[in-house]
Image 1 (cartoon, one colour):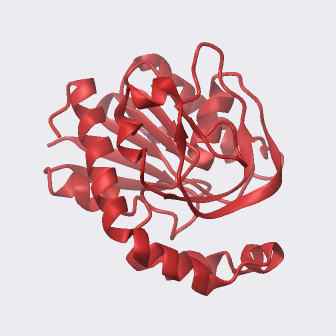
Image 2: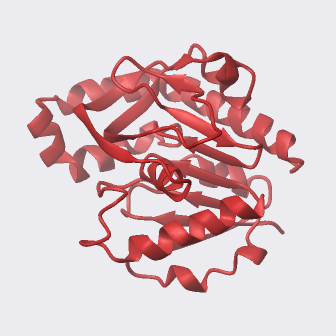
Length: 234
């Protein structure tokens, strides 16, 4: 049985649709809560897939959240090992930081379902399945591109939406994993952010319902292609 470890920063920002996708394929899933569990005790040699999830803190907020230092070290070790790692939103920003890139606030937050524009490199990889599919964006920071990597996707608000290191390390600034059936958890948990941005929850509910089927199919296609690329049985 293969094992996936998810590092979670906020209870409802979990693996979402990735969890049942892995379980249907016989994977064991272990969730570690950053700031609660000691991430230094994770034995990366026993982990077949590491997923670093999102959260509302900044990638360089070590002074306020000291656990980030150990988390970035863990991510760097994982990337260097050549073994599978996926970073989502904050997780992608922490991957960029681990690779020496900067992360900084955007001019405005990007929240809602919008399509991606894929670069030539993006069209040649697993993210090609997102060419016509809107995904959920929910972030106020963005990463610079780590040295030696290419941007795979962008939006008008955020020029760097994804990158890969080799075939084993993938970073998404966007949220492909979110189950639209559970969007209410996001709307409740981030109510202050929505009010600050002047966004109506009903709009996001409607968009989540509209894109639910397409997102599930897109996630399946992206993960299947990525796993095949890495030599893992999808």
